[in-house]
Length: 382
Image (cartoon, rainbow, N blue to C red; front, side, top):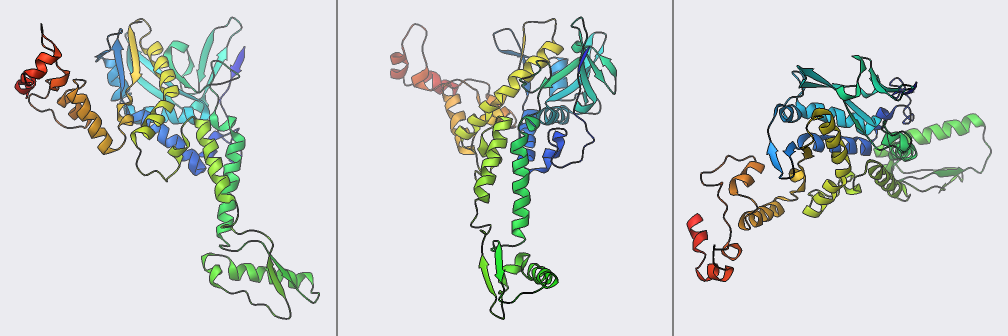
């Protein structure tokens, strides 16, 4: 029997990202990537459709996925936890609780407490510290892509451990450099020979007097022909900022999102930024939706699950309003459908399609007839 065990959760070494990916959350870009992806995928609705007609259905399972996983976990916090676990450890789990063969609730698990065992006859089973052995059909298993094992996800942190270690070293270098702002490595040349104790005392005195934010204001005063020369570059001269930016870009690539998601220069996403980001998440949503459908609707092949990315595609407020205006005028959406997406109450008559005159057709006539009629149909709808 072969077993795919989880990572150890007991390592405290700050550089042991390969053995304990959770330590990478101490790095700002990793925390930003994990929290952004998990929060966005947790807050968007998961919709169930039947067949190819894209007619949304409302059933108890949809209620579980979007409202409450169980009596203790809301859908948002449970989905966020599972996705964070998947992003860090490569795998996220939830036990399916059934009552009379019907799905009753979902119970999130700790990723490090679950292992996958494959018996000699090929049968798979999960072993959990909370519930013992669990059959594959009774557990939701979200997983990242892996190039080694098909049924077990690989941690992006462990796979990109070199980028994580580089980012950690750059963060440490930045902290140390800011303790000596504006000054690079210095050389102090003395005309007379002094003992090691005097050299150590001189060095300690210099660090005490010139380290910290106020150190840049203190002049360097020498006596007895001593000379001070800079032999290393300061923080403002060195390539630290460039290297740190490249490390952040590598971390973004490890999680499969555009690098601008991890930078603060972009205060407002344009619609193009929003679409690039939403498209980058499709690799997650397709796999997650397939796993949820396969485990929660095993007997109904006509059901399709999808993450509704509408909220992520809005872009700026002005772009969203222009897009909604076009959607209403072309008959793609009604006013109340737009108001629903904006969390506004419906209006009376807001369920009617209001198509512009140049988009209308009259039974037995042509578009030119409608245009010559002055758009009477549109006027009546108004």
